[in-house]
Image 1 (cartoon, rainbow, N blue to C red):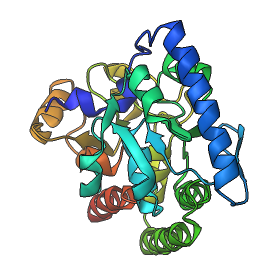
Image 2: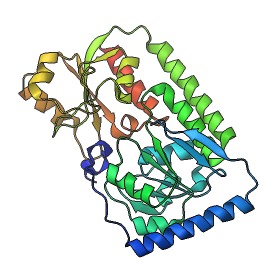
Image 3: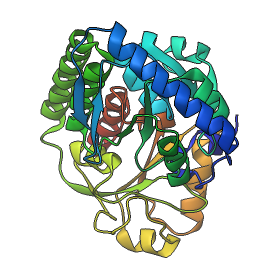
Length: 312
């Protein structure tokens, strides 16, 4: 599996042209009929939530057919007890194991709009900064309820679970999951609260060389472990930087994601060739444990913290 296919922050803004207008019109009529059917047949109070962009979403009833457009969304839905309500997902929605059996609606750059219409979802959930804008616009033009997921802080994941539980009508399971996550987060914070501060570079990608600013959840992971993100002040969420800037920042550690088939030695060799200090530590973390804003990000955080603590 090529590692680039798993890195959702790399996705270009590409989307399929979608079904012809006649199909879209028929599909919208079908969806309207479905909404009316739900309104008459499901005596459940409506749901109103704000997504991570501030958009307020109203549902007549908790969603029973949800389409996920990002692997982390799929993982969060299962964690919130809503796995049974996920009608389809995109490629690399592979956790938990049950998610692997879900029908596929597309991938990071393109979705099958005709199939999306035929699925008749009552909710579509996408990644705010990772799903291409044209893909989101296509979903909106179909008249489908759309929620954008974008947890930017570790604290936000617990609340995200609660919100998804409300959307899917699984509030009790979501609350339990949120509390488990928050207790674990508090434990990691307490364990590593005394670590000395040190400059850390997060390598989001090597070619092109990308990192994160302070608004990204990965920067929050570094801070949890005593790391000061050396590019925190850049204005772009996932900025491109040059090798010379990294060398000049003199990071005490380089944290980077590792996917199946990749060797950590290749990253270290690259930076040694370019003159990064011999004392710099290299901390590889399984990609899904640091790139996905889900409860498992604490597994990745624990690895980063332990490595930085060992080098203090």
